[in-house]
Image 1: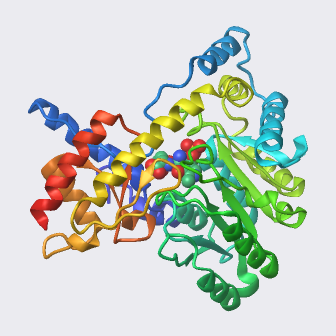
Image 2: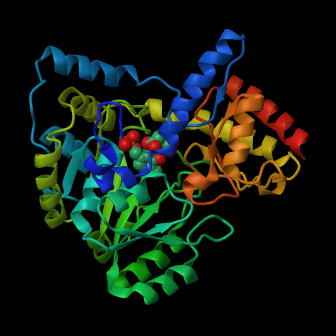
Length: 406
Ligand code: PMP
Ligand code: GLU
């Protein structure tokens, strides 16, 4: 019973009460409070927690939003976005992903997260199954639960990519109850990037069992060395029909707060999604849509600058982590995360990834996300969307911490 006399446990829905808070956002809150306290003591937290570019939004994109505001482009638009944005998205898919769509195949929403939620609501009836390969981005499972669906986890292999034998076994076990699988390459949290033959093998299984594919490609621009990004939808007409590609300007153009994400899919899917958007949200912020037009259609110079910087950081951090005793680590092919296996350091006091992340924050003031939040307790996630100075200092602290608990 609360102080004002209402029993909110009874009043509020089970749906809301059973939902887990986003661990990435919860961690940010905790770090903010801790950092405030530390600053008074002349110390500070090195933040490798939430995944968000540390660059400013490029000037040409900010200017486009300012112009839109000055031109009073500040009213409602179609719920699924303005024609100019959809055209820029179409063109992006044509030029960069070898995919032809019509305007009717495009949907723009309030960030990739909200677009994913609408897609899942559009597909999922009570108890329908969504396959979620481990490790997974934090919101997938909770969005499925919010739609009263059932997430079923697919195991990964040593490269932290889908174990095809496990996928096939699960398909045989659950059959027609499976509606969707969520692919994410480049992957958050592991940084793994699927190659063409791996995606083709997954596509073959999905076609065989009639499973639609959500392909979350928000990190597609951040791939390193000779790694290439493939969109599974581009391999055949059949795969295009069953794939919903999700992307956003959030990561690519350092626009996380602008909240513009988008997807491409069969028009029947988009039509149903549009009704949900009409009733639940209306259009994404109008000036932000105009900024996104400039992001997608204007100069791409800033993307290369960010990518080159991330690649330098990835190389540095990988080499440092590999030299620390009892830490195992794959070289991430993309995104801006590295996902070391820290289970070799577990002891009587540090029994899991939550203990590890807690102690690292409290003792050495470094924030990371526990692997358990992504479905695998052996790991922690380090976001290297941080300055090189902070990365150097943070990894020094991390190394000291690991030495002390070894
Ligand atoms: N998918 C993945 C894999 C992510 O890491 C994130 C977080 N940025 C999102 C979707 C959501 O992106 P947005 O900020 O555009 O909602
Ligand atoms: N996607 C980012 C992350 O994984 C941002 C936080 C979130 O959207 O949950 O840290």
